[in-house]
Amino acid sequence: MILTDIIHLLPDNIANQIAAGEVIQRPGSAVKELLENAVDAGSDEIKLIISDAGKALVQVIDNGKGMSETDARMAFERHATSKISNIDDLFRIKTMGFRGEALASIAAVAQVELKSKRDEDPSGTYIEIENSKVKLQEPVAANRGTSIAMKNLFFNVPARRNFLKSNTAELRHIIDEFIRVAMAFPDIFFSMQSNGQEVFHLEKGSLKQRIVQILGNNYNAKLVSVQEQTDYLNIMGFVGKPETAKKTRGDQYIFVNNRFIKSAYLNHAIMNAFADLIPKDSFPMYALFIDLDPAQLDINVHPTKQEIKFEDDKIVYAFVHSAVKHALAQFSITPTLDFELDSSIQSLDAINKPMTEEQRASTASSSLFKAFSQKNQAHLIERSSGGNELKHWKDFYESPADKKQNDNFSSSTTSSLHKESDHEYSLMQLHNSYIIVQKGSGFILVNQQNAHERVLYERYAKAVEGKPIATQQSLFPVTIELTSGDSIVLQELLSDMQDLGYQIELFGLNTFVIQGTPADVLNGNEKGAIENILEQYKHFSSDLKFTKREKLLRSMAIQNAIKTGTTLTQKEMQGLVQDLLACEISNATPTGRPTYMNFDKGEIDRMFGR
Image (cartoon, rainbow, N blue to C red; front, side, top):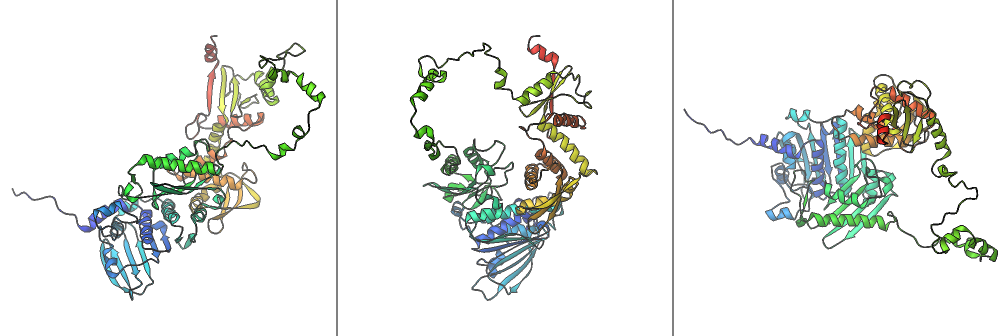
């Protein structure tokens, strides 16, 4: 029997496809790599053009230094790079791309067309590559700079193409990558077109101007400058004032040497600086740039270069936390004590006019004066002349409305919540958050926000299944302008939102007109309702187990539910309890929070030893 060798080298095109899986995971990955190369080329004008969410086309055009004929051909070889000469260069990296894998990876899984020209060359170079093989190379007339077009991504790896998400999801990833590069270089003009429509047009300017261009005008007057310089590192950028905090992490950016990174560790440092200024379930906006010696960090720990390792994590954490904390304090965001007397107080009669003898005698004889001026009198409580010292003790903690509800609750003869659901019964609201319903064997404690969330969710679910909610037409339609990312999300949801009572029309770039809303949306709150729904929808966006429609239903139910702290009338409480009991699932919200708790009289008696 003849034994044969079984180990062999993979063909270059297959090896490149395997390697491409690490670098090019989706169209957004290619966008990141191509934009970073354009920045490294010294460009001050970069254009991104995409078609079919990058699946059909991703093209980046820059006016950088361009490439020679030889360099243009070499750029597509694996590990071909102009950034690294020896191993020590890995620890002095200041450019964006350096690994020499991006173009080779793109050429392995797409059809690529490159056009590039240097100033000193009479003509440019045109190259077509498919499946890692050069199909055509010839001279071409061109302006200085480089244009790379990546067409039909994963055309030769169908299984990979099938794993791509919807166009809306892939477009959001592309926009995320575009923003991360564009925000880091405000001195470069960036534009982005999608299917012939301009999504971004970012003129050169300051960092603050770039942040406002990208994240929206609502941040224009709500940014706090962060500036700290030390011998070890420098930190600069902006954080949003506490009132801009959102329920999602979207507007959070950390850059190290102008490279966007993901760092839960540094995010924790920033969140700690905002402690006690924002709710625990909210996230502040920040765009912070950390500049330090490249030798103090390793950016080569992940193919996407978005995860890095600091030589000393703790000192970077301390500097970031301190810089943000100092910025918030400096701009009077954190509370301070002011011991200066207000000028309006200085003009009061009590300050300017001397006390008369009659006023002084009257004050000295009062019990309040004695309690503070006579020895051992601070504890003194003067008895009333009527002799009934506890006559009005309930008035200290019970408002007239509370007393009325207490009376109603005490006289309630409801024997069972379910049996009496079709009749008027008396309820009591506790802390403007809970509804107490007496029943024969005890009582039920209903959480009004959770209960309403369940009611709305089931109402919305029926609406999208064929029973649309009526639309209340706006007498004066409201215009709402969104960021590019939010605009894409809203366009994706428009058809379902129409079934839920919203009539919204696209009106130009990232602008919509709200023609009508459900009846329960208050006039004047149309814009806020849409923004809150989008914010909540993005909160669910990372949960793959939910469909687009399910995320929308849950988002609307959460945003439109009666909030904790809202006072309800007897009629409103009765309506809510009846609606809850009519639900298919009445005991929990869609996210699993209980809507009510049952307290049995026997258990209550045993608690009190009865």
